[in-house]
Structures are given as C-alpha cells and as structure tokens.
Image (cartoon, rainbow, N blue to C red; front, top):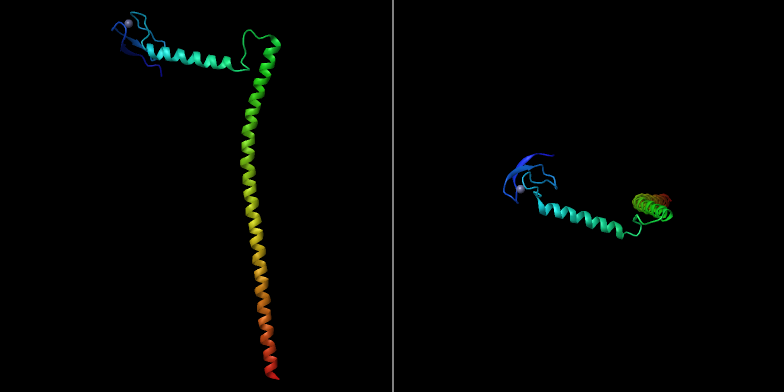
Length: 142
Ligand SMILES: [Zn+2]
C-alpha cells in the first residue's frame, strides 16, 4: 500500500515525494507533509499512553519486582475473567436452547397425553353408544 506520489509541500510549495506515511517529510524544507495528521497521531498515542498509565494494574518502571509480578498476575486474572464472561454467555445461550427444547418436548408430551385421553373418551363414548344400541336391539327383539 506504500505508493509513492508527488505532492506539493504545504510549507514551501515545492513538489516533493509522498509515500502516504504519517511522518513523511518534505525533501526541500524537511517539514511534515501532513502536519495535522501527524499531530493527531501523536495526540492519540499520548492519550492511549495516559490511559494505560492510569490503569491500576499498569506496569510502571518504578514498580518493584514483587509489585510487577502481582500486577502481571492480576492482569492475566482479568483476562481470565473476560474469557469467563464469554464462556458464561455461551453457557446461557446453550442452556436457553436446552430449556427451549425441554419446553417443546414437555408440550409434545402434554398434547400426546391429552390426545390419548380424548381418544380414550371417544372410544368409551363409541362403546357406550354401541352398548345402548345393542340393548335397544335386544329390547326390541323381546
Ligand atoms: Zn517543503
């Protein structure tokens, strides 16, 4: 992606080579070709550096050996917690799936039971109707 092209220096107005890097300088006056971008980049670096140093567990050159090791331990521990959180969410999703399939199976069972009861009822009803018809037939024959 490093394409070299010519650009007019914003400082001296001479045409100079520009590779697209943040810290490209003019060949004639040695000033930055993109001073705003350069200062923005520097600012970003400083901000992230400050953020890192404000972090409680950030390693500082002034820390002693034990303090460093404790900090490294807690930093890895934080990563562990992070992974644990991910695992927890995966667990939640999987158990949700499990619960859903359990519900489906439960409802299937219930509907099968209800259907069986209804079938038994209608069979019973059918039997009774037949018995009644039988009795009426017998009564009629007498
Ligand atoms: Zn220049």
